[in-house]
Length: 303
Image (cartoon, rainbow, N blue to C red; front, side, top):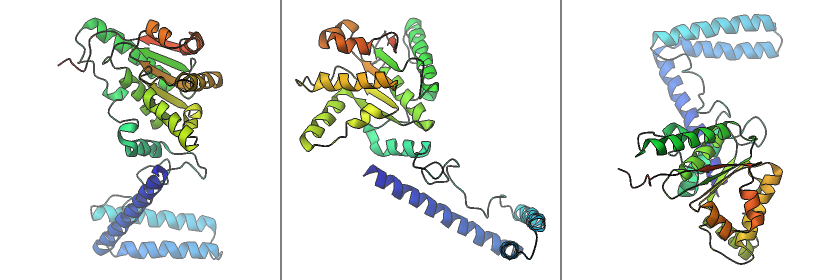
C-alpha cells in the first residue's frame, strides 16, 4: 500500500516538474523568440551529428555557442540559466525514488515513506538538529543528556556498521530516550540507510497478526539495517510469544552485527526480573552494546 502511494507520489512530482518546465519555456519564448530558434538549432545539430554531417568536435563547439547565447538571452529577460531545463527535486535519484538503475531506495523515498506512515513512522521533529539544551532543569541532567546525545550521534554517523552494533537507553519516562532513538533513525534514513522504529508493544502485535494470518511482517525487524525498538517492557506478556520473539530478533541481529537501539523505562534490575539471563546477556553485553543511563526530571512536565 505505502509503496503504491510512493510510486504515485513520485509520478506526480515528475509530472508537476514537466508542467512547470513547459510553462517556463512558453514564457521564455514569448519574451524572446530567439530562444525557440536556438532550441530548434540544437535539435538539428543532434540530427546532423547522427547522420555524420558534422564532426563531434564541430558539434561540441556549436553546442557551446548555443548554450552561451541562451544564457545571455535568459539573463536579459530576467530568467535563471536553468529556466529551459527540467528541474528535479532530488538530484540523487532524479525524482525516481531509486538510486541508479537498481532497486535501492533513495534517502528521499525513505523519508517520504516515514511521513506517510504518520505516527507509526520516524518523525522529522525529534532529530539531532532539533535537540535543545534549553529545556533541562539542572546542569547535571543537561550534561548527562548532552553526553548521551553525542554518543548517539557518533553511533548514527558510523552506520550501518558501528563498532558496537547496539545501544540500550534506559531511565525514567520523559528523559529523551525516544527522542534519541528517533534521531538516530532519522539520521540513518537521511543517509539512505533503511531503518524501522517500533514500540515493543507494536512489535508483539505484529507477531500476533503474523501468527493469525500466516504472514511474515515481523521478519522485517530481523533484517532491516537499523532497528529502533522503543519502550521495551511495555509489551504484553504472552506465553511462548513475547519473550521468545523479542529474544530471537535481538539475538539474530546481534549475531549478524546489525545496528539495534533499544529504549526502556525500566531499571536494569527490573529488566532482569522481567526477562531471563539469556535475554539480558544479549541486551546488555558490553562487547556489543553501549548502555546509556539517563537520569533527571521528566522533561514533559518541565515548563
